[in-house]
Length: 462
Image (cartoon, rainbow, N blue to C red):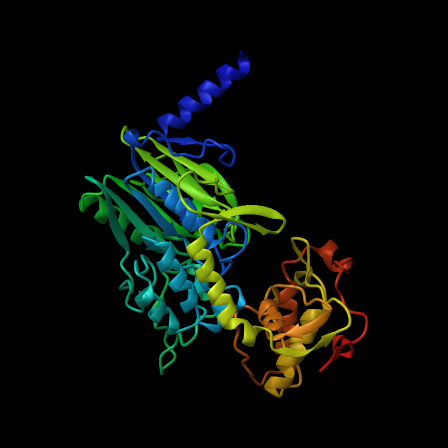
């Protein structure tokens, strides 16, 4: 009796806030509800990072979208950033192959993440090729003018749904933004950076007000902001939303988290916010009902359809239902790149480890694989030493045949090698700065897994 009463109270509180938030990933009752009661179903993804055939995959997403379209009149698909970078095919094609996949699945709106900027001028080409284009309020010229449309309205019958896009101002430091300075050394772009987050919040609020004035019945913030400790505090999703009013929902990305919760906005209103992890381990599903209710679910597997063609595939020992046509298309892309990806570069006699489960061991101790990469940069740059950002090496290099694909997997972010003449003191200062924020006990007893015993190049035979 007490459990029933508590559950009823919680549901009542959430309904007052405008959202019935499912507390767990969706079960077999995956349908959004009675089609006669539903205005629109909005699917959302974030931080796919080129994982088009991992987990649910774009082919599973395409199938799920078709399942919903067979039931509901208005189904929309949006992405909250970091789709085109993070794996070899994305890097080789500078994002274009992923854009083609997104078009084929049928995205209706997309926000650039910080890694959409990794390929320099290629972003403009990707934006032009993406059928829905990009929406972003704070990717601006140096004089503060947005380069992409800051907001858009999508219609579901006579209901207008407004979307405001935003990317983290940390994009200046958490991406490889090429050619950001003009010929006299001045920045050509502005992400509305400051020490308080007020510049960003003010511009987002302006966009919210504009889209409301344009007739939007609902306004959703699609943000690549994230909310964990790795993000500059004033740019975190909760911090920015805490300065805003007039929103109905926040769809978040950037921090690779799986959550469906609430955050307090600038008027003290509990606002629903959801994020669907990374690499298509989940799909976000927001349902807008005709009575004004909003319902968010997180879908971790695509259900078997009853009247839509499908295939079964096994990924990471988990069976998934996928769309046959999309799967064939993705298989074709992989096959086209196979000759290049399978090019043999050498052999490795033992594993070089940079990730121990979910722990990146290179961030708190010397690491053999990172030593190898730094030495390669030193040789290519013709320098006496080389520095490598912690986190640049993203995956392990396993024993056996080393291919072009192997190298691209450990270095998916295509960083440039930059040479400079520095003093010994400058080098020492850089090293001290690199460990300045590590806990003192970690410096005394660093993580030792994956560190090298002897030069790493002694285990490689060309």
